[in-house]
Image 1 (cartoon, protein in one colour):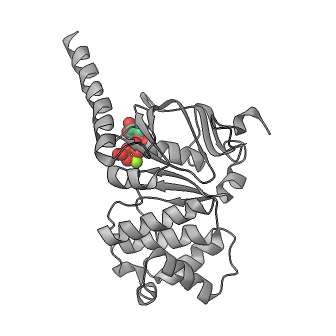
Image 2: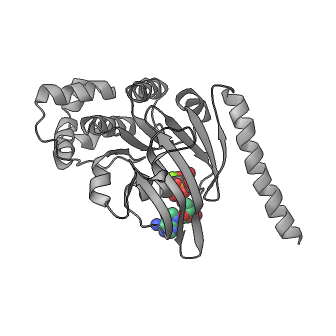
Image 3: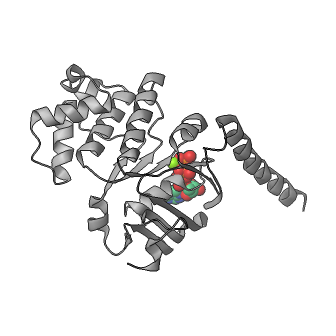
Length: 258
Ligand SMILES: Nc1ncnc2c1ncn2[C@@H]1O[C@H](COP(=O)(O)OP(=O)(O)OP(=O)(O)O)[C@@H](O)[C@H]1O
Ligand SMILES: [Mg+2]
């Protein structure tokens, strides 16, 4: 085990970035990002549009290559072992891409098989569907008629079918109705309590406070503060967040005045 594997709490990191830097031309998306998530932890990333949350998730998935630094999954560098590390991850994007001509169940079967889990019986697949909050009769319908939240639930069911211990969730709550968001929160909490490591990008401060074991505030490609939700409520997290964003405006105004 390398020194990279042990985080500040003395626990083993499942998801970790070390001085991660990513640019797109002139744009600096990540500027030396350091974060870690251990088994049994949920780190919620809050940050303005363009702060670098999705870029972070895409680097863990190997969709992008960093300019420098490392994204590690269970201590393995994603850039060096993209196929192996991807197998250990379940990913739920904001827009779950599905085959419209197939039913929800058929999509689940297809994407589970693609991830190497081609052995599930229909009963087992329906169990994942049920855990995702989708009803059986909905799963039997063509996805072309699905609402956004229903598509999201197929994404959740697919993530469950992968039986991963590390979850990357990019605004998984956006578009879910309050009951669906509540069900999702319960599910995420259960997964975490069963030992999953969850990294979740969100704009929902209320859910972040409810779900996270730590909240990371991202600004301009860096983690500027970590908040422990045990000690604060959502309105206090909002105040801390807004304070960081206001500092941004103050910097801008200073720049304009100069
Ligand atoms: N493929 C790309 N090409 C060019 N620039 C990109 C690309 N992907 C991201 N960026 C830029 O990188 C920065 C970080 O974007 P990112 O999508 O990671 O932000 P985010 O925190 O997920 O924002 P949001 O809350 O809007 O989802 C932004 O300035 C964005 O314009
Ligand atoms: Mg994003």
